[in-house]
Figure 1 (cartoon, each protein chain N blue to C red):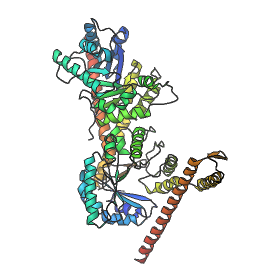
Figure 2 (figure 1 turned 30 degrees about the horizontal axis):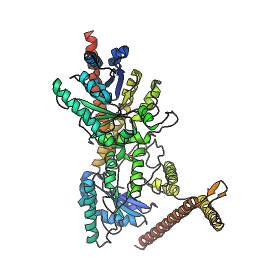
Figure 3 (figure 1 turned 45 degrees about the horizontal axis):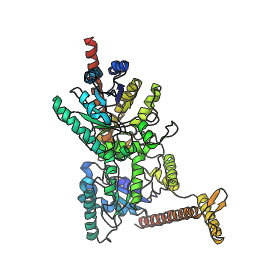
Figure 4 (figure 1 turned 90 degrees about the vertical axis):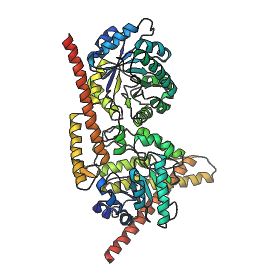
Length: 302
Length: 308
């Protein structure tokens, strides 16, 4: 959300998001950039009341000024749109390190998300991936920025981002980084508040192994969370598979048939991973509930 | 504005010099460019090639000759003239190949008194090696301003039997598109299914396929038949509706910025910000360049009719 939009920022913590991106970049007009920087510290505090992680998206043209204004306790990471060179990442890292020290933060607290959001970034990705130990993940591929650099329309149902997603995913995994896998679910409306599309997108993304989603409107938060969280039926099935696998192991069998599923060590690992993910989702939901309740109580006390 | 290639090359019609009927009429189809296939033997063909180039240019098209790597030297000797726009280099696989052609072109330019660097090299990528090396190919020379993908050849290279039911080249096409655009050059291709199985199809079907190619990132296509030209010209040109939409985008965004926001709600539940406004500038600019190119070709055609 644009950091200079008080209405969005002040309500963000009530929306149930696992994370927030406070934007200093493209949603903030040039004339408001300086003012927007003065708002970051309070905005981090405000958004963090909801229990989600807080990230700030900075401008690659103003690395020093943006990082200086953004690195405060409560921030989990920085995202730099239009990242093109290793030198930009080095400069960002240098300023993050300096600001962590100045603000008494544990060194290495702040992650850097590099966004391969254009054809130029895709061709630079192999160099960018190891430009800083703070890079643990890439930002997503496939928004308006990428469409701009390809010269394509966004909402035609054509998957123009197949190659950059595929290449980004391979490079990230080869360097032990995360890549936000995102399924391509045709969207011909472009509506940022389409809850049904958000749910289908999230469901498809989870089937691909993706764990993250994003959006620009509060309407999509709940369906995105729901689609990325394992269902009760899936959890029950995973538990059944693990019980059966325990039985197979006791019998010293390498595999066995459970209904229509062949259960072996890989299927068992997949079930275990699903349960781990379900537990992580439940932990996050509990944390958000706790933090929101606390914030509401504080508000009532004031 | 984002740096992009300013070339307008929506349709590159391939015509054989040895097909007299096709050659005689190739200039009438309104192609932005024409690629002439040369005869296998280049003995005593210089005058014929020069005449073919003159004929092909009558409608205002840029004219290229399609090289055969093993005969490139003889073919360039026979075809380089001030009227030629450049050469197509099929099965391009490495920077070294491009640079070898560049050296020969430079020499021919000197001999013919053509300004240095005028003649273009258009690599056509049609092998696995070419796809893998596309970055070095597009960046091998400033003469490379455009690339094309040849999916028929790619099928041979990868041992694929082409079928309309299955698209094996999403990744390959994406690689050519991304690398070419990142080098501020122009990628050409028609995409699935006509890329691997080129043939004549109904006009509306061709427009639909070319439109999808445009929405994958291609800016034009090699046209295997004259019937492809107009549909490609149409599909790779922004429509009046798109231009009108993007003019509205520009107005709404400018008003939003005046109000202090660069994230502006737009009808239909959309949200527009900087990249959407940038896209609007590019689409309007691209539309104007297409109109200008069409006017140039119309003027050339008109001059032909007046002459006759």
